[in-house]
Length: 166
Image (cartoon, rainbow, N blue to C red; front, side, top):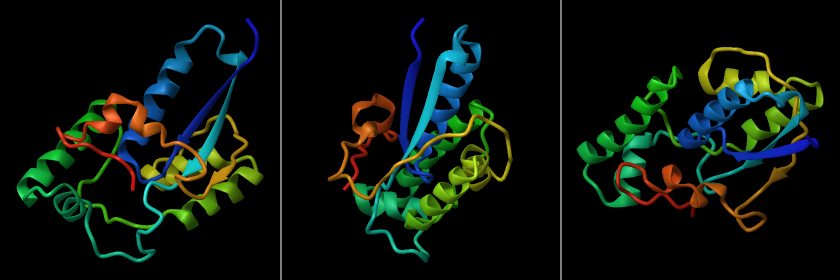
């Protein structure tokens, strides 16, 4: 088998990215030729207009963005939290909407020291793990790259609501 490069574009706050990356890693661990797969992690900001310090909770953002009442937004969020839990991933539904630019910068610093995957896991879940180091490139906006989440059914179905990045 020829070497294969798998590029993973994600935002550190995207719950679908978190679940998808976990599923990818689990599948890769079972793949007979995993030693011939290079995983390259790429940064992507889903909402570059989000404030650095926000008091807006994800449920409030979902309610406003999709025009649903808070109870419906909470159901949407619980669906994602439930999927994460089914994968054994910790995820809180009381998260805040934040700008991830500085978090991505931190991950790039960690990558420069061969520690990006460990830092990604700590930032997302508080649980450190060890994985292969990656070589990242940072995309500042959706105008630089297409949004891979719009090409995946789970990413465009957030409890029955379309999830497209702005």
